Length: 282
Image 1 (cartoon, rainbow, N blue to C red):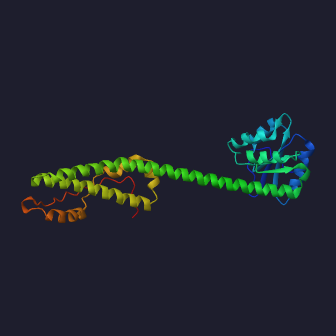
Image 2 (tube, rainbow, N blue to C red; image 1 turned 120 degrees about the vertical axis):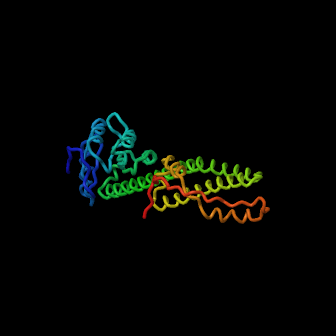
Image 3 (cartoon, rainbow, N blue to C red; image 1 turned 60 degrees about the horizontal axis):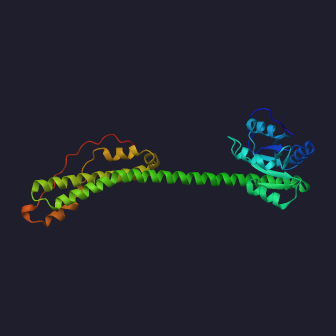
C-alpha cells in the first residue's frame, strides 16, 4: 500500500483513495481488497474524524470509503465537509457498513453517497464495481454542473445584452417617431429638409449598430460587449456616414408630394469614424 505524506494529486489513471474507519482490522481489509482489484490505488487511511479533516487538507482524493459507525460520529455526517471543501468537494464517497438495513443504504444514497456496500458482502469485485460506478457518477455530475453553469452564464449574457441594447435603441426609435410626427406637420422646405436629415442620421446610426453586431457575432465578441454595456454605447455614440440607401428609400415617398412642397434630401458630410472599440477582422 503506497502512502503519501506530501500534499499532492495522484498521477493520471491512479485513483487516490481515503479509507475512514475506526476499526484497524476493517481498514486493513479494505486496503487489501483494493490492492487485489484491477485498479491502481494510492491508499490513505484514518481512524478518527479529526484525522479525516487533516487528510482532506493534506491530499486530493478521487474517492473516499467511509464507515457508517465511527467513534463518536456518524459516517454520513462527513459528507457536508467534503462537499464544502476547497479542493476535495468533487471526491466520490462510498458508504461501507455492517448494517444491512435497506433504509440505511437508501439514506446514504439519498444524502449524496455514490454507493453503499454491506461489509458482509464486501469483496474485491464489489469494491472495484462500486469504485468505477462512483467515479463515473462523479464525472457525469461534474459535466451536468458545468453545463448548468454555462447555461446560466449564457442567460446572464443575453439578459445583460438585451438590457443594454434596449436602453440605447429604444430612445433612437422614439426620437425617429417624434421626427416623423414633426415631418407630417412641416409646412416649409427648410423644416422638412431638416427633419429628414435628422431621421436619416438616426437610421444610419441604427444600420451601423446592427452591422457592428453582426461583425462582433462573427468574431465571437458579443459576450464581451454584452457584459460591458459601455461597449454597446461606444458602438452607438461614434459618428457614422449617412446610408445612401435611405435617401433612395425615402425619395419615392416625397415624389408624390405637390411640387411646391417637394424637397431634395441633403447628403450629410461623411465624418471619419472614431476608432472602434472592437476592431473587425480583415
